[in-house]
Length: 423
Ligand SMILES: [Zn+2]
Ligand SMILES: [Zn+2]
Image (cartoon, rainbow, N blue to C red; front, top):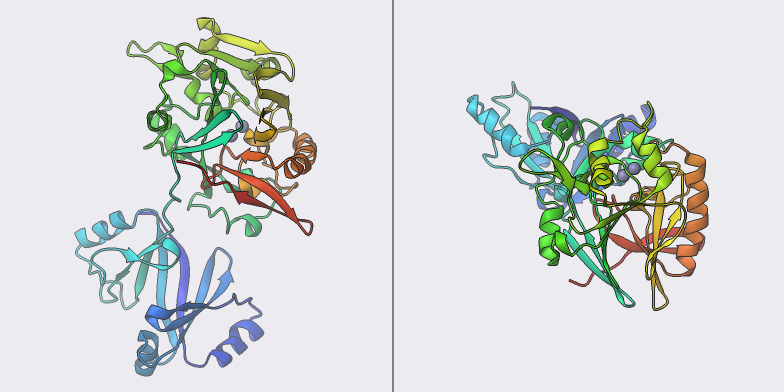
């Protein structure tokens, strides 16, 4: 099993004296205390690099910490190891004949799951195993009405990308709370194509698809147990109904679902009746990758479209169907485009990798993957005030928890208000 040191718990008798040492003498920063009422404990976390110290203060004589301090005096109380799969960890420990205090994991703070190992098996140390909060529950299908159009966000599952790469020049301490990385520094990203029902039925992007091998899936932490197929079924849409497939760009997490391998091993378009609309510059770049973008452009995802004669290349910003037009943003790739949707005076935007998650709202929060980050900056600076002014419903293709929201600005501070979907 893989484990990381999450924190070290220290039982404290006199909090003031403890702070005099840990805060004043050592000069460490103490976070605001957390009250754990059920345990009669107040926890003061002290960040130390990737891990933390946890000063534990009893709030009642009944508290286990109070009893511990009475019996043994203040000092080291427990060590918490964070594991990826706590059920597997407990099973492995038990299979080796070690003793658990908790035979089965139980709920811990903030949606985590925990289980204590008995100190008699851990050479006198109380060890807590912890599995971070479960993946946020995401609706595979989120429906929105926009004038005469129906917009349906569909989820093709999740992928894990390096947190540092996702936030470019932004230091980890600024992003790791809202986007907690796993033990391989990956953060969870959803892949959410958007279905539009109007004059025609269109899907924008199609997620990763299922052509990638086990090694790829391991590197990118692919979780497609619930994928586009399920989402389409849940939305009541068959692949035959799709008239148009529109690409924001051709990276594998957007275009992977454009093609499938049939029983004979041949690659063919996933949406048999659809025209695939791709920006010509993006097509040219994707079919002639260079050293810097080669890992993102996988030819099997789109070359078969040309061979099948379903490809339509578009040269400039254009209306794709009534109410739906594309606008080049550049930045992420030279010809990356967003999709602007308008019906009956209401607006929506599918911004793709210009602003992949809600966390990317601040102007400088730009992905390290972007080939032309200054162009991303310019595109965001142009788009965000426009979205605020027009109450644009913004779709976040990679946000792990929220499919769409409105950008609000109050007293110069911007935030995103998640949009309720109608199910
Ligand atoms: Zn991309
Ligand atoms: Zn992407």
